[in-house]
Each structure stands twice: as structure tokens, then as C-alpha cells.
Length: 240
Image (cartoon, rainbow, N blue to C red; front, top):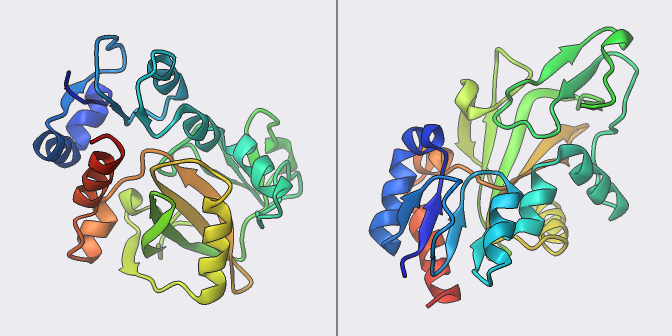
């Protein structure tokens, strides 16, 4: 049996470099989310926890596990979870304009809008108080529960700082307090390879979201680190 890596057709085309790395370094077979055949293990790059759960029920190891994927891809559930565990977040279910409104399952800044009118409040979406420092956030990559690297993203034209939307990316050195906060979060969740995004509010980082199928473009753009090789080496240790 071969390992499999699951992407939608659209995401496989957009992430051809990553697909090639998984195939070259692990001998993985790329398949689409409807694949239901055999696998030695599964790398699920769909953001759909149900895909992971389908293989887990057959006793097949999945990277990332379905429980992590389910939490990471429901923003409101993730905010509630972090708040219950005393991780600082910007308040949600926030009705006082201005506020930011975003889909519970959104990614890459898509569908995120700035709202100046209370009538725009929508309980089916995440409505959240904006952080003080707009157009600036921090992504931390985590592998096997350990911090790998961090990158600061800044946009001069948009309150969203996403790299794919034109934000600039530069390497970032975490302070001791920031490292402690990241470690508190990693201790709460059971993912293999993922990102943790933070916004900046009054000089402090505040949890913003978990990135289940975290991208690697910013790491390759800002360093000589081969983070996908590190991920593949980790997988080989877990599933020798």
C-alpha cells in the first residue's frame, strides 16, 4: 500500500509544488476527496474533517487527525474553545460597529468583510471586534507540537494581511512571552503540522485561528528552510 495525499483538483493545481514534494519524498499518491481505497496513511489537505474521519474509522493514520481538523475549520467553535482555556482572543458575537464579519469555515481572507453598520451582524457568521493593529498579523508553524518558524505579515492597503492577498512577509523572532503563549495552545490541540495565526492588539499577540492545511509559501519566500521536507521526515518517523 502507498501513502495518499488528498487535495481537491483545484487545490492540487494551486499547490503543485507541495504535491510534488509529498510524492517525491514519501512516494505518496495524489487523490481527490472521494477516494475510498487503500492507504498506508493519509495526508489530508482538504480542510474537511469528515475525510479524515472516514479513514480513521478504518484504522488508518491521518495527518492531521479529524478532531484537530474539525476544530480548526470552524472558527467560532475554535474561538470558543480557546476562550474556555484562557487563551486571549478578540471578542466574538460582537455587535457594536465597527466589526469584522467572516465565514465560520473561511480561509485565506476570503469572505472577510469590514462592517460599519450594526445591521450587518449575522449570527451564522463570526462577528468579531477588530484588533487595534489592522493589516498586521503573525503566523507560527508547528510540527509535532514544536515551533518551527514564524513570519510576520503586513498589508499597507487592506485590513487583511494575508500573503495570498498581497501582504508582505518577513521573518519574525518570537519573544519569550509569545513563545509561552504558542506552547499553551499547542498543548491544547492534537495536530501534526499546522499554523497558528495571531493578530496584534495593544502591543500583544492575540489568537486568531488555527490553519489546518497550512501553506508553506511564506516560509520558502523568507528563508532557506525546507519545511515540507521537515514535515515528510516527521511523517516517516510516525509511520516508518
